[in-house]
Length: 144
Ligand SMILES: CC(C)(COP(=O)(O)OP(=O)(O)OC[C@H]1O[C@@H](n2cnc3c(N)ncnc32)[C@H](O)[C@@H]1OP(=O)(O)O)[C@@H](O)C(=O)NCCC(=O)NCCS
Image 1 (cartoon, rainbow, N blue to C red):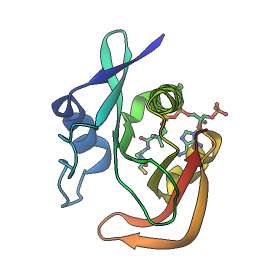
Image 2 (cartoon, helix red, strand yellow; image 1 turned 45 degrees about the vertical axis):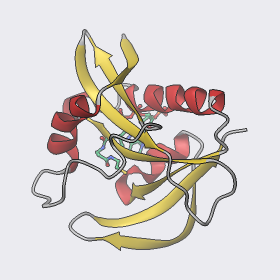
Image 3 (cartoon, helix red, strand yellow; image 1 turned 135 degrees about the vertical axis):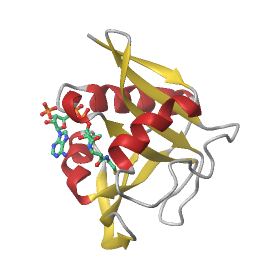
Image 4 (spheres, helix red, strand yellow; image 1 turned 180 degrees about the horizontal axis):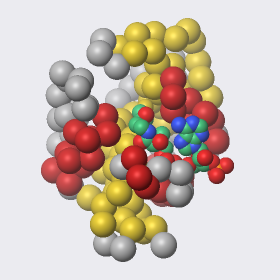
């Protein structure tokens, strides 16, 4: 069984480093990590943290209303595909709806686009490159 809980910024770091920053010379700490509105979710299996994600109040010109950006979505390799990512997204949707947030968006790596589509997000605009990581799409979902 997988449980989703809010976690601290520091608790996200090991999985960010392992899954998102291996051989990538970019910081594992993000602008906004410690902002008052930011929250971080962790997925736990048998009390072990297996996946993390972070949600920050960041506006993007493409979208209307109150917006949050999803960053640092990562599941440890050997625990991918067992529902941790989906459960974190569902928890985030419910928290964001409670906060009356209109739109969740993210910069999605190409390999994760299908995962986000399954969670109801859609792409907007052209592919773009982020140095050291590769091609991304902006993806979004209106929540209300
Ligand atoms: C993308 C990622 C976060 C998904 O997390 P996860 O915990 O493995 O996802 P889940 O097990 O909850 O999968 C939910 C659904 O998405 C599917 N899915 C998961 N990863 C997928 C992928 N990369 N491509 C296509 N489908 C995917 C699963 O098969 C599952 O489908 P189902 O609901 O029909 O059974 C994880 O694979 C990961 O950490 N990848 C490497 C880092 C990364 O790319 N992060 C995103 C940065 S933008």
